[in-house]
Length: 100
Image (tube, rainbow, N blue to C red):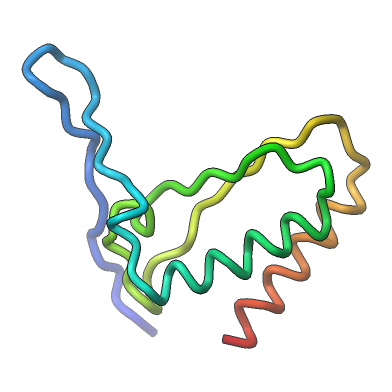
């Protein structure tokens, strides 16, 4: 069993007390970008009314660690959906991860 590692950080503030954005597309690794492209395609396939997808966490900060990190995403859609497409999306993303 792997040992628990202390990993993560708190949001930084600037001199005025505002949160500093530590994320950006330029921070993504090539592997992370390729994986996100697959996730985005799956979101679009399941949710044709997709508005936007957001990435946060270690992957968005360029600190993704294979075998340790997860990829945190959430999506905005244009209208309410039944639960079945959400279950299908979760299953398909899990299958995508297993096939990497």
